[in-house]
Length: 631
Image (tube, rainbow, N blue to C red):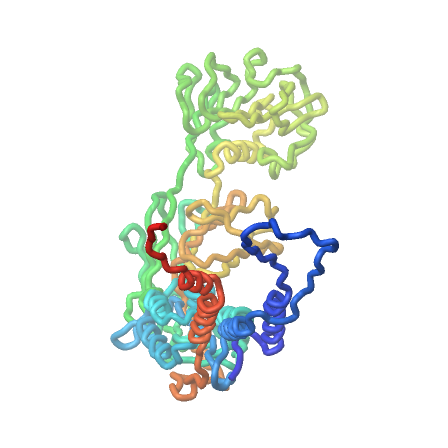
């Protein structure tokens, strides 16, 4: 016999407190009683008031005894009194279902996840009905499907609704979650049961600590498998219209395999390669193809095995877009070599007489020309007429020396030329919202205005000023085009990988405020930055974009990645348990105790309460006498 909810001192303390209160109420009875008399005529006033004495005698001892017994029974029900041995009472178990991507493969004719669900239901049938079970789904994250639940229907529904995910199995996190749940919420900890293939990476296998109460119910899984490890695509640094493709393939099995690979873009073949893989080996292949169009790149292993989910990867490649630049100039040959040397720019040169103010896309360059109606697109003004300049001209100078650049602004990034002498220059008077990009001792030479549309005003002509053969001239125009059309110089890298922790190697150390990591829905993801290494985590498959200045990295986290080895811990229980050792040896009787306690209070109310007084009064009603005639 033992208590489940209360200890013996707690039970005695609560029982003593309640009993004392009830006995005190019976002893301290000061209630005035009302007496009905025929008349007050024969009563005399007493010279001294009567002295009231407290009764020390119980008026209804059997009522007190009945109430004390009823409260004792109710308190025993609250404490959950049980008959039997507490060492063999009900326990709380954690059932971990392996929901990694590998569980979507087949072992024989059935999927491994179906076999895991069947094994979990068999284990549930082996447990006593009083045991509670928490269902925990484990892949790259540990997600509880139920709390500690004794309702077998709810537990079976959680098991039947379990499906494989897209990430690898993080067994260490699942075991830590299960131990923490038993420590905090379990009344008496039972087993932690892992049901699944338990395929994890080789690095994790050496670091996992198996708890003492762990039971492993292994699901048979295929031993031989070859799959895509990673597919990465990027634009060539030498030719922006050329894509470089890198494919990594791994043999997860124990014998050598031959794996043919085919790569296609837009349905047309890009390249093929046959891998001769030794057991546990990983090899790479590279391809190059040239295109300016957008389309789908597909890498596929042309083979069959039990797990086909990682035999195919698809990436969407963006188009190579050229920014249109319309130049209105009376001397187009001055700016033609400068703009044609900038990749990603499609320059069109027009005479001043063909000016069209309705141009709304691209960039417009006005070479020493001021139209009557300003353009509606982003505009670069080169040495505009002083009376029609969008930024007021303060003065003009000769033999002006360029002193400094605004290096912290995108328009001045990478420009270091100084002491360049300009024969004729206009010096501007910038407004409150203007940014000075370059200046001399006499005043600003280049001013930018962050408006809609954006404008940049140059107070000199770079080619006519003697800067024709300097590297500063094409870099200056490239910065202006990049500032107005950021996508022009953006480099793309696309990678097909798996969910979990993703590590990105940046080209250089960057300011965290300039880095954006977001999902395809535009939601921001947290990340960490250590030097040139950026890390972020996602537990759901999908597209994640990393924006770092002019570089955009797109991660298609849809490629499942199975583990390298099958985790086989030692010194733990394996397989289904026997039923006999887990049968409870205690019997729960709190329902009967609560029922008896309630019946006792009802009996006290009937026998000694107001109901009894009403019955007695009804029984003592005088019978009505018949009417007699007075004589």
